[in-house]
Length: 199
Image: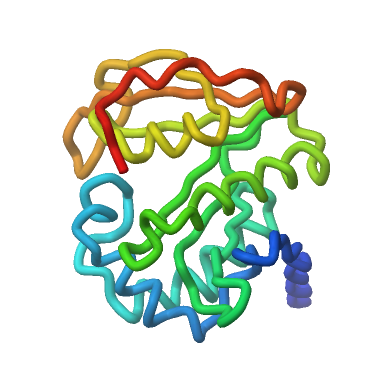
């Protein structure tokens, strides 16, 4: 029986605003990835494996990310400092449906409050709109992840609904905030911030 040839990995676009750079994940990112995914906030608000290990990082970088690009299910980027190229976090587009996708992001504690997360989101919004011709992006945040919701608000996402028990977080039914961004309305006047005061 003849062996099927391996499907080549699509070239991951490089997106940059001269402060942050979005690129493909690389094995040299593993130490920062492990630290970011073991951070208590990442454990609390994302679906990263518990006790994130070097094996988890290697599998994510060498298997999960490439497979997502190959089959079109998830496009994962490393968020890197544009100067040092050091990993700051990850951002992805997933759940593609016609002309829409969901956006996910996990930025490590060293980069929080630096503006890197917002820059990364804006880069991927531009890519989604002009590179992929998507019309809408959606953002989910577990309730009450106010920092995630405020980041989405800063990027122009509009709050749509609170969905009771919509997600299963670590096996527990969890409420979710759903927000949306329309590619045709960048720069639209944002709705007033209604959450708590955050830095």
